[in-house]
Length: 430
Ligand code: LRH
Ligand code: MN
Ligand code: MN
Image (tube, rainbow, N blue to C red; front, side):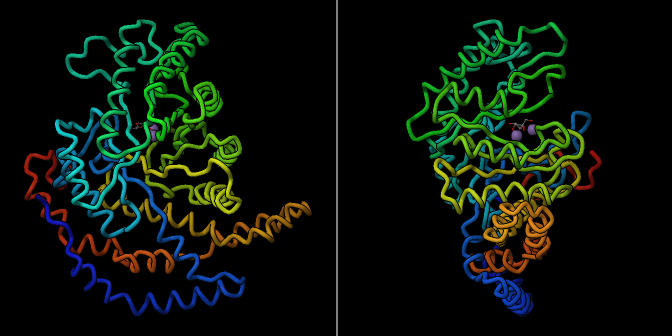
């Protein structure tokens, strides 16, 4: 077992930065006070912020062309949990892990729950996988899963989702996320309406198996692996399906799953308005479903999404309480570092949205003062809220500078020794 980073070591490293943090925090506090914002209130909210880590994100994702695994990659769900614990110990905002079945192979769910408990981790949404065939699978998903023309394949996909609910119960999860790659690659290949009817019929059977305190999240994606049409291609088909199923069904927004230039924050607003916003998969993209690190390319978009979320939070919008999760693929970075960076990037957007002067914004909107409305948002976005994020981590016993502490700890090298045959030699050359 790879040893977690010692609390005393984190404290030692923090001590080197604590003086600077105090100065920066005071300066930012004075700056915010000019606008009647109490920095302590914002820090308290930042401390409550949580975003889940995807179990599959702790390994190198690669692309469909190649994968270049790094040193000491986790070889199973237990080792993924070890890495997730390190991420949370340092970041203090990632106490949940979202598993993917059957990528995560588990024989004994009680034992897995005990392990996660011992690492102070909880379980977020369960992700089912019917977008590929498993070895020896009796009926293929080649022509779709929940919408397949053959009942045998549909039944298999339905049963897998029902199994996921059972496994989730054992882990203490309360959400099932369903993304399917179903669709078509050629015009005419599929009858759109019949395929959607079959999908809805299958989803109704899954919905019927949901415990009353669970939610079913439907994830849309415009394309890939089906390159002509996809069954739940956008938020329109998504919300239609969610409305058809019932109040426990909601839509999940993965930032990389839209056409370029789509106004995602507006989609978020619409879903909030109709009590259908289930959750997020945060990542960033330039071309398509790139799964780049969150906020690495479009931090303003991420902030504008949080502007909608914070607005709903302040208005106590009924039915509002989405799950936040990262869904990224790390090709060239250490996944632990990328996940810590990305969690902080999303948290940064949240905090920046908290300091938007909403009273002023609302006045500018009322008066149609477009320039000042936009500047009000920009003012919050361009404020460097780093001291708040650092103080939130510090107050909770995490690292002021998570990446620096992680690198200084030598955790990755230790993982390399403890996890032989994990597929990488650390150089990226395999
Ligand atoms: C599909 C997706 C979905 C899957 C994950 C691995 O592109 O975003 O969330 O479960 O990738
Ligand atoms: Mn996703
Ligand atoms: Mn995706």
